[in-house]
Length: 105
Image (cartoon, rainbow, N blue to C red):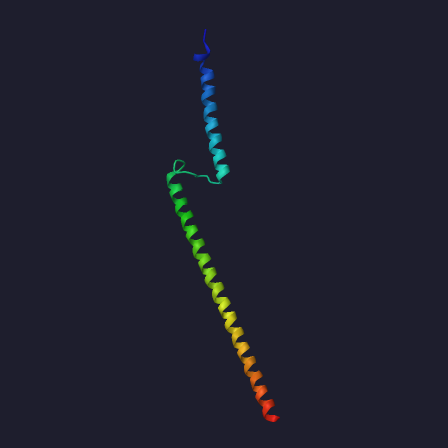
């Protein structure tokens, strides 16, 4: 007569369920984080590569933002210089018209 404590079939089924539960937890973690390798425990070399790539991506974003800011600053300055030259030429032509009209009077 066998008891529940020594039932090998039940122990095998329990071991299988534990394994499935671990795999389910790992799959849920991958789905929630969007990462196949979310820690060094999953795959140390892939994790090292991915963290390096993430940090480089962050640096690239910062450089890109800095370049965009510089580009916009130069664009604004260029626009202002162009309009300042246009205003200066309008003032010059307006003052020459005033001189011409006052000398003819």
